[in-house]
Length: 139
Image (tube, rainbow, N blue to C red; front, side, top):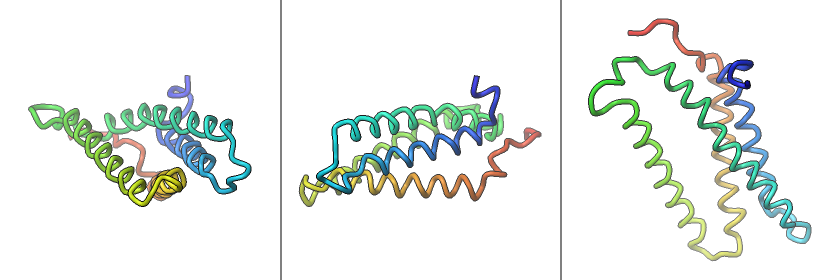
């Protein structure tokens, strides 16, 4: 229903806002008021947002990539798979770096970085919002 009612770029923008909210909500800023409910709610928001973001992102990608790139071995599917692998590898390095100095502040370090990256993604989406519409003609 959402994909027929809204453009992909609108869905991407709103879902990124929800993901940023979840990242900020999970951080332990006031340690005496932090609860299991806060953690579970924020993590569910992050999980749902990241999974929901994949649909409109792949839809935009499929509309923006020229059809000639879908042929051969080095096609769009391989590029998307390799981009995902690179993202997971960078995430592993960031997790390791956040835990290197001790476990007491890992939560805030991890989600602080994730909040910053989410904000950068949201800012880029806002800046290039008009370019997130697919081109009309194919090459």
